[in-house]
Amino acid sequence: MNQTRFAFRAVQADGSIAEGEIAAMDKAAALAALRAKGARPIRLVPQTAPAARHRMRTRRGRQAAARLAGELAVLLGAGLPLDRALALAIANVDEAAAAQQFAEILGQVREGTPLSQAMRASPLLFPPVAAAMVEAGEANGDPGTALDRLARMLESAEDLRRLIGTAMIYPAALTIVASGVILLMLLYVVPQFET
Picture 1 (spheres, one colour):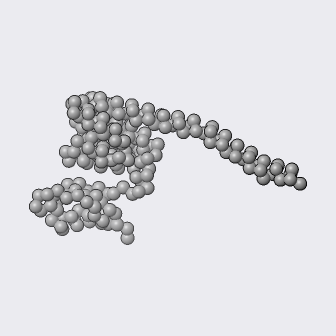
Picture 2 (tube, helix red, strand yellow):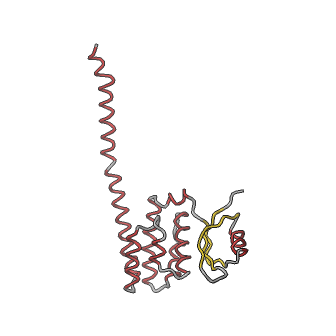
Picture 3 (cartoon, one colour):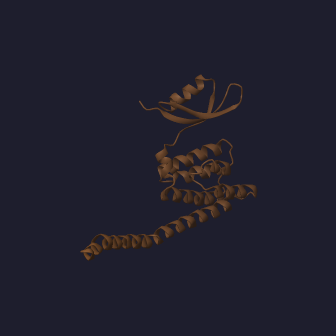
């Protein structure tokens, strides 16, 4: 039977905080194993599979991050507390792998970690500049404005990436056709002149 790896954060018997990974059949078994060691779990989340982590780099994962930042900015601007706003924004995420990573960020925020640090711990979702922008917004007391600017920046970066991909189609096609013509000349036309 396959065991799942869980990332955990727990308070040990001496009061210190321990973080790490544990393998178990399910979440209940992982909780029982941690408690058997005398630790009180604070957070226990399944590790994201490498394939799911790779999907974070896809266009849909990047779009989900931009949408989440935009929705979070609107919800914070409406006066909702950060954890509630983040939970509502995550509920609208369609990409399953992205939603799981966002849920981990939400768990860290509920533990008291600033949003910027939680974002910094998830580099597959947000580039380093995203965490820096949110940190600046937290420092001046207006994370909503920083998240709005971040959403616009992520959307424009995605538009630019799409534009570059589209612009590269013509040179790639031209290179393939030119290579085909050269091969045709070398393999078919030139040997006929040899005779």
